[in-house]
Image (cartoon, rainbow, N blue to C red; front, side, top):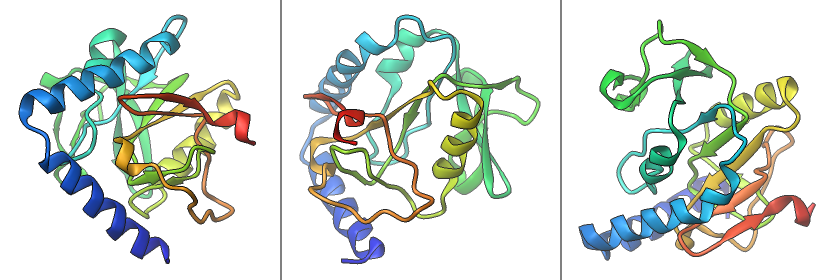
Length: 186
């Protein structure tokens, strides 16, 4: 399967899974996700999160444990991270909430990463524009200890995925039922 085919397949699986959850069940799953990630949060000086859209798993319950954190802002071919709270976010690229350009820039040492599919070795399939791959490369150049955690529903775990030379691997994958250290697979 091509990356396009895989995106279609995993988007369909994700959509069907989330449609099977009522509001309370979805919230319970997202709270369980936060519990999986919680042991990684002590000692983090700045975390980067994302605004979940549609049936993406929402990091909101993780954010509640973080305190001050940053969100991505699209600027041309890149994303930068800016400190903001939800009240300050406005629709940006493709209508996704993002901080104002004037919000303070941040250099996260932990990054919560959205995805369409992922392997337990940390190979991530994103939207296909490379925003997070470029961001991870830049953030890791400035901080080799950056911890990149892909957040997923269980139905987004793939046995294998193709990876191009520019695809940046994730360090960890968290779902509502497990936390996997992908670095052990490399």
